[in-house]
Length: 565
Ligand code: ATP
Ligand code: MG
Image 1 (cartoon, helix red, strand yellow):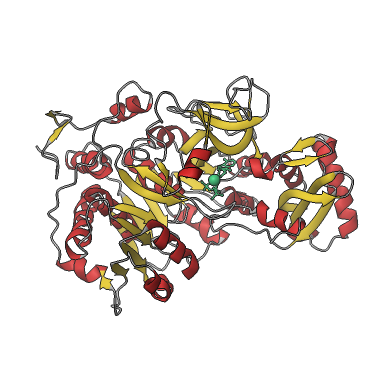
Image 2 (image 1 turned 135 degrees about the vertical axis):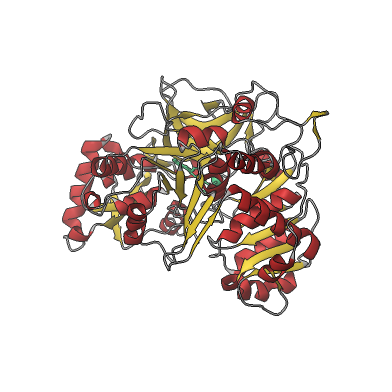
C-alpha cells in the first residue's frame, strides 16, 4: 500500500520508508542524511501505517487531560487526519505558503500539536511562544521574525491586539477558541468545514522547519532556526537513551509549549519511537496535582525541570504510589546531586539528567544502560563530539576545566540550528577554531563524563580563584535549611569580588536567627567543598528570580549586587 500523502520518489529511487534503524544510522554517520525529510510524512504517517497493521501497541499518540474531566485521546491515524485538516486551514483558508513564518502562542491544548504538525506537513516555519509572553515580548518576536500569521488562544488575543498595528508583516490572526472575535479567523470554524485531503510537502532535510527562541536567561532571547531534520532525526538517540522511550511508553514532559524542550520531550522524541505523549493542562503548577497525576495515570516516563524536583523532594514522596512510573529525567538547568539522591531514596527511581541548548538540542545525558555518576551530566550524544576547550580553541585534557564545545567536523552536524535569524554576528560568535562553543563551563573526566561548572558569564573570580556557582549551590542544598539558592559574585573592596549566596529557606528554618544560620551554612560549605568557595555573604530571600522556564536568573542578582540595572 502507498503511504498516505507520499507517492513520490526519494533521492531518485523508489521511496521506501525510513526505519528507526536508518534514523539511528544517520545519527551515527553510518548513513548519509537523506536529501528530503519530513517528520509528518516520514515518521508520523509510518506509525499510522503500523497502527493499521497492528505493529504498534494500542497506545494513543496523544493523551490530553485538564483535571476538569475533559480528555482527548488521538491515535496516530486520528492525529494524521486532524493535522491534514489543520494543514488545509493554514494554506487554503489563511493563504499561507511554504516558508512563511507562523507564531504559535498556545497553552498546552491539543491544537498546539495539531498546528505544529500541520506546519510540518505544509513546510510552514512555526515559532512556538509561551502564553506568558507580554505584549512587548510578542512585539519583539513578531517584528524580529516578520511572521505572516499568529495562531493564538483567547488569553493572549488582547496583548496581540495592542501591538498588531506595529507589525506590518502580520497578515493573518487565527484564534483557537470556542468563541469568535472580531478581526480574527476562527480556527475551530474553519477546521470543521475543511477537507482532510492533503499531500505532505516533500521538504528538504535542511529546509527550515521552526524557529525557537532561547530562554533569555542572559539577555534578549535569540531566534535559533532549526531544519526539518535537526530535531526530526536528531532526537532519535536522546529519545531512546535519555528518555528511555519505546512504543509502549507514555511520557509526561512538563515543559511549557514555548520552549524547545516541549518540542524535544513532547513531540519529536516520543513520536519518533511511537510513544504516547501525555499532557496535563494545569492552570498552574501545584505539587499535589502533579503527584496525584502520577498515581492516577499509567505514565511510565517523566521529564521535568530541576526546579520541580527540588520542590517535590520537600514532600513526603513515600506516601504516593505511582501507577507505572519507571523512568525519570530532567534537564535545562543543573540538577543538584542532593536532589537526585533524595528523589532516589524516596521513590526508588533514578533521575536521568540531560544537558542541552535551544541551538543544538541534547548534547549529553545520563543514558539508559550507562552508570550514573552522581552530579555529572553523563556522556556526549552521537553525532556530537563534545570536548572541553580553552580560549584559543585547544582541546583540554580530562580533569581540566574549560568551555564545553562541539566539534564541527568538515560540515556542521545536521542536528545543529542553522543560524540565529538575521544575526550573523551572534551566529559567528559561537564559533572558535574547529568548535561551536556553548557558553557553558565544565570538566570531562577520564571516563568521558561531563561535569557542569556554570555558565561562562556566571563564573566568579575571587582572589584569583575561579568559582562556579553550581558547586556552591549544590553544597548549600545539602543543608536541611536550604530549599534552593543562587550563588553570584558580589563586589568586595579587597578581593575584587566575593561569593554571595541568595538562599530560600525551608519551612522549619524560616524563623531561625539569620546571623547564626549564616555561620552554620558557611561552615557547612567549607566542609562540603573546597573552603575558598564558601559564600562570604549570605542573604535570605522568599524566592529567586526565574525565567518562565523555571531557570534561576543569576544575572539579575549579579546586576543588582553590582548596581547595574
Ligand atoms: P539565553 O541563551 O537566551 O540566555 P538559555 O541559555 O537559558 O537562555 P536555553 O537554550 O533554553 O536558553 O538553555 C540552554 C542552557 O541551559 C545551557 O547552555 C546551559 O547553560 C543550561 N542547561 C541546560 N541543561 C543543563 C544541565 N543539565 N545542567 C546545567 N545546565 C544546563
Ligand atoms: Mg543560551
